[in-house]
Length: 291
Ligand code: 13P
Image (tube, rainbow, N blue to C red; front, side):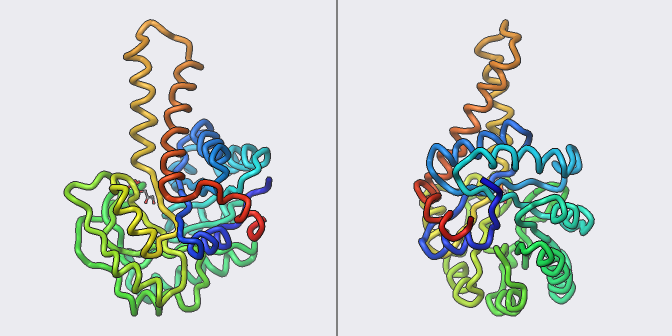
């Protein structure tokens, strides 16, 4: 089926108390694996991509991979641009057919961040799509952004003021999570998630999903996170599954068997995360409102 927009998918998840898994694709095979994983579990899925990956391939290639696999799939698939501050990349995603984009201007002061986010809201509105924006910087390394450890969490009043006129599909903010593996024990401010959600009424995107224990994820979802991002975990499985195959079969030089071992390992990761976030069996209901 055609790609679906992100906003109705996340509003449904927020209402029903689960989260939609969002994975950062790396190539065609990982794209296919995430959509097939969603199919096997009859779940919605967000296929997202970093600006760095788009720059390595191209808008057209990435769009074609996702649209082609989604077209033959019965489950709802969103194509989303992850953290991006380059308006040219964002505009081209909108023009090419992305069904959601993120502007990350969180490094700027509040007013500038809000103004730039509003500009992207207006760009996206021309194609009838909504956006994800960020207030308060999420720690860790993502793409070319490296945010040092800090303890400044997003203020609920600021969050309300920020979201008020943006009509966001998803809101990202600093609630204690971090991109990459956690150095110590993750300290998520569950109560803050609740406070922010009660003031914004916007589905919250939990960044830094890699390395969060299951009970932490469950509490984040219970507090109101409706989109959970996984990237680092996939990067590791992608590389390790390839290397492990070579270790196990050092004399095998048939590339398709390597590619398949990698594909299967990535698909298992996607299935386990979709199930953990509560997405299993949700596709049909989502399609009633999002298709
Ligand atoms: P991880 O790399 O920690 O999984 O975070 C992914 C993310 O939030 C992408 O925006």
